[in-house]
Image (cartoon, rainbow, N blue to C red; front, side, top):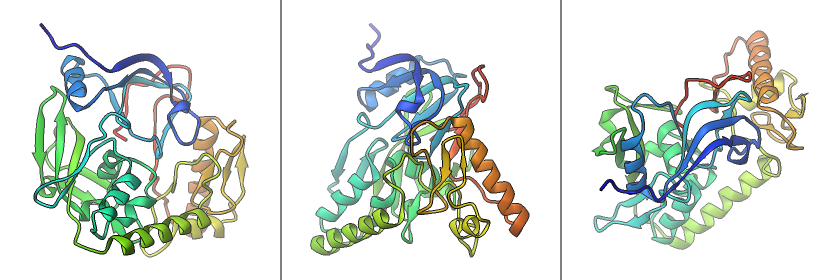
Length: 307
């Protein structure tokens, strides 16, 4: 007898409930797995050409108002195993929040994971985009990763299997796999000092970022040798609004939805205006750090990206 699914499958799930911008259209299907084994069974049964969207905390994602005609898989709260291995490495599944991993590592008297506390997403998202802040980057700490194939199989890969860059990671040889977890290594340190450093970084984040309003973190990558926030502010865009979407007064590389009324279209329009003005005034093309996908109109899209 085929193994039964233990997770929950929903139809036409509004993504405004799951994205930190609190805006966006619906996904045609949404699966909330019970755990990694349950997700593997689900993938085995899924049509091989089904568009997939991996969602952690939805902190760098915007689904257009017309929605996404595919299946979204929600990892947070499901792929949540976190442990210290006998060899000293730290294993975290893709749905573990990055700040949780940072605290766990610090409490184990290891150093170097504190930067993860400033990443408002999950381990899976951090792996997929080589997330980083405060001078740290995810893949500098990765020992190996666990990948899940579309037929539910598991593969352990090392960094050499990937092309790793600034806010971008991809398999060197095309393969339809998703990040299921990773083993990280951090040097020995002082638990008290690690916790103090972590608190310092969190206080700096609270002081400099508009965390009180719905946002998706940094919207643009920093150009080489410069900062996106400086360019946006120099272009006179701080505080600029379009239909409820606003360039933050606190940090110009954040677009906020302060009243929770902005549509995905309004947010994307403001993103485009910022890009156009910075390009015109400074000759710099700002590259989006956030993922925008789906259909802008009433018809659902057929394409997607891993988040």
